[in-house]
Image 1 (cartoon, rainbow, N blue to C red):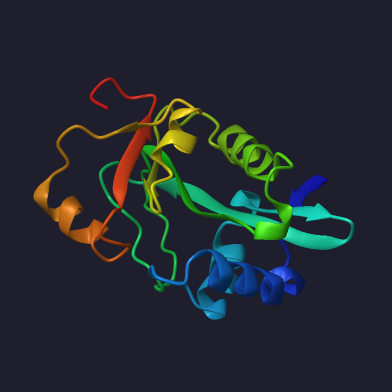
Image 2 (image 1 turned 60 degrees about the vertical axis):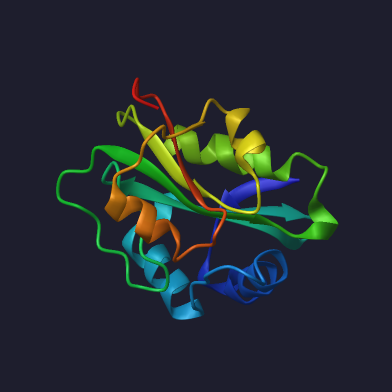
Length: 165
C-alpha cells in the first residue's frame, strides 16, 4: 500500500469509489474533483494497492466554522485559519489495510502551520475521526448547522486543535 499524490488519471477510479461509498449523501462531480486538483494539488492523495486506487482524500486550507459547498469550484480563502479534510473515501475492497489512516496522516501533515483542522463527518464516522483527536463542535452556529444538511441528516462538524471543540 502506498499513499501518493492524486492525479487526473485517477479520477475515474475516484468517482467509482465515491459512488460506492456515498450513495446517499451529496457528491462532487468529476469536474469539481479536477478543479480541486488544479487549485490545491498538495492536499489531494490516493492510496494505491496492487496498482489500483483504493481510496482518496481531498483536503485544503479553509475557514473555521465553514463547511465546504459540495459540487462547487474550490475558491481558497485569502486568509485561511484552518485546514479542512473535505472528502475521504476508501473502497470496500481496500478497507482494513490502514488506507484511511495513512491518507488522514498525510492530510494532517499537509496542514502545516494551521493549528485547527476541521471536517464534516457522515455515516456515523465520528468514532473514526475521534481517534485522530477530532471532536464534535459543541454548539455550531445556525448557518453551519443548515449547511451540514447539504451533506446528510447525520452530518456533524468536527474540529481538532481548537479549545472550543
